[in-house]
Length: 135
Image (cartoon, rainbow, N blue to C red; front, side, top):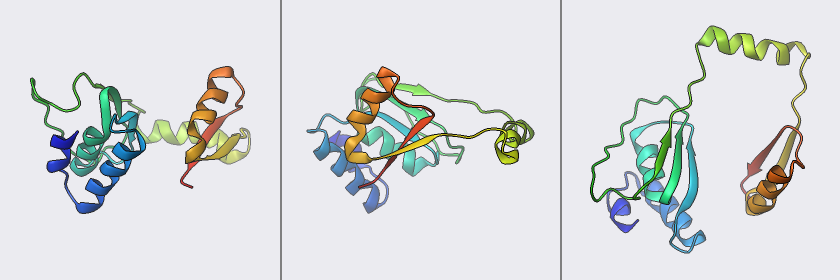
């Protein structure tokens, strides 16, 4: 993880990576969801993942993450690139919610309670979705 931090883009990203490292005992995050997809956020994601972690690139910010083998940190990570469709398809999916035909249930939990929220999800104790909010 230290190698990735040496190449971190802006200072705030380096600080964020150090915070994640400290919070995880230097292991790194199990999963990172990048909703931006810029080069800087992809580099931050790589710097904060644990070996074998998963990066889900959701955002389409046009960024690039160079991966070379051997020596890339973190080793053995997984990358997923979810695809959500076209803008008209998105509008079609959102229309029922906008009309009031759908009601989304959302449970807000503090970020510090993430393990308990995941446990509730695994047990089926959450209707809808859980949104983790920074403490």
